[in-house]
Figure 1 (cartoon, rainbow, N blue to C red):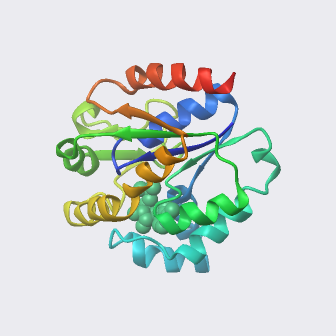
Figure 2 (figure 1 turned 45 degrees about the vertical axis):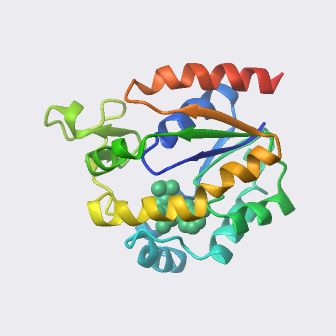
Length: 211
Ligand code: AMP
């Protein structure tokens, strides 16, 4: 099963992605994670990506598309994959159509009012990528899952979040229509309920798709 996960920043894509990938034994490919790993390792791609990510803008399409095109040739994609954070605009979606076949698009709709607080209060584990909200951490600075250190992403600040949401609205949201027309969209609504509640709905839809 080859899937795409769509949704605004902070909609809960990362958490759903982990659960989907585990259940269906498919590989989770997050372009944001790929860029952050490159930044950490000081690669040329990392240096380029950082200048865009820090402003909340998209990394240029040629770079992003080439990374995904190569990544999908790896052996671990043979069982299927879940693209998280890609495509992010119509150009990327059209390019993806040239080298991939997508079975379903999990789209998480969410009230934008929830997102600023979610993103600015988000803390992420440096080791396993699990994310938390400061309101539930009670001052803890380590990951409950693996003990890794929690940190705040540099782009989780009010100014950058605003531009990420603008980019989502103008460039990424039109993909909902694009994939609706292709008949592959699966729509969900993100709420403040625990991620496991939404996952139950996602699971029901994907179980049906996997048959
Ligand atoms: P994310 O972790 O998905 O929120 O991505 C963090 C940042 O990485 C985004 O705000 C963009 O700057 C960059 N990025 C991630 N995926 C893409 C993509 N498909 N195209 C362009 N830039 C991307």
